Image 1 (cartoon, protein in one colour):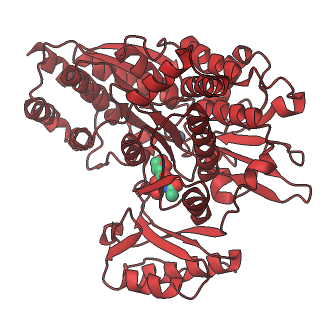
Image 2 (tube, rainbow, N blue to C red; image 1 turned 45 degrees about the horizontal axis):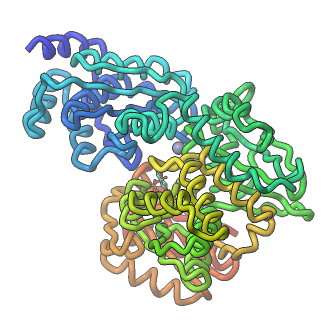
Image 3 (cartoon, protein in one colour; image 1 turned 120 degrees about the vertical axis):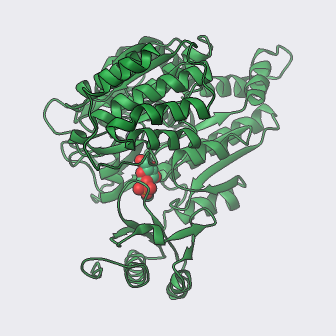
Length: 545
Ligand code: NG1
Ligand code: ZN
């Protein structure tokens, strides 16, 4: 076939370095940008084939999110804007690792296995972040698409969630919104303005938000969006990319892991601040109090605020819809306790990685899902959306129910349901705080986080650790879980677990307890157990204090 000749010719321009093996991991391929040209070309091929298979538009996003500037990566977006399915992740790994001369065979294998009709039209949307390597890498994706005769649309610089949104809009024939960045701003900002329009006593102080754009794409896009907000949200933008380096000592990941404010930002006591990550699919909030103490409001705090708000509205609207919060093992124990025991909200725990959370959230009428690191969103079932819509249009309901239904309808519209989205999450949180007339300090005191610590341990082969129960218990190596159980018993309100990272060559250790000293000590002792029982390499982990 003609298209296969074209692939042979073009793939020679995007050669695979001999011996390089990469895995489609938790969030696609991610490594130093210099190693990715062939991966990009091949993902262009794969997206085209996936488009033929699904008879729908597929997205390809070139980004390495919160990684350093010199890295890059690529992820595939499925028709409804969700992450690509597991079996196609395997196809991606196969295609990525085929030797240059075996590429056609690997591609044909996928086509055969999936029974693809190659005469079907294909359509691929491509987006990229602000990394200097992203321009040529996204061109390699486009080359891959055209090598197989697919149509492509290059959205250029967009956030990851914007690309997910475009794909969903396109495949729902505009029902989700218009597939342009303008359409994105219009949809989400209009909903935000509707939500906040009856909170007229907001002062300029309350409308003010300090934002750390991580020197990335999120900053650019917030600037573009600003006029749509009609001063209802006044953002002072820091780390906008004009000076600093992407994700360097700033951004959501830095703030969450370091538990301190980003550099390049002047924070006044009590001021509400937030940080995006490098592709704007994560967000965390924070403030410093009058004593200069830093307070982080992470994904768990956001999930709590959002689910409380939604539960109250559902009650006021008299709608019997099933709401749940989906978390991972990294969720702070206090948040889970508060949600289950005070809010009486159903909580489900799942494996790390948003695709797992997304999947579980789909089981409910209203599924709020967040990773502690600030990646998350809310999903509404079709039935839930219809019930809310009906009630909002019903002329025979009392004012309270009507008002709640209208708020719920606008809340649905301010949320990007395709994937966690820093911009949309920011608008949602800002709207909730405005409606509730709540300061960030008041939000923070809903519950108090248990002190916690995350550590990394280097081992020869992290796959020796196998886990169960949503990664909360280690099944192998023998004796490890027993050792962890015995260590946990020594501390109050303690919990600890270990799991192999899906994005780094390390084992992650998490511990929480009643005091920071205890959490630190427990994390260290568990790290030692991992080092000794799971083949630690290098120096033994040292105590933190
Ligand atoms: P790993 O490296 O598998 O722990 C990390 C994050 C995940 C997720 C992925 C994808 C933690 C503890 N882990 O995964 O939540 O965001 O990266 O970026 O934050
Ligand atoms: Zn990200």
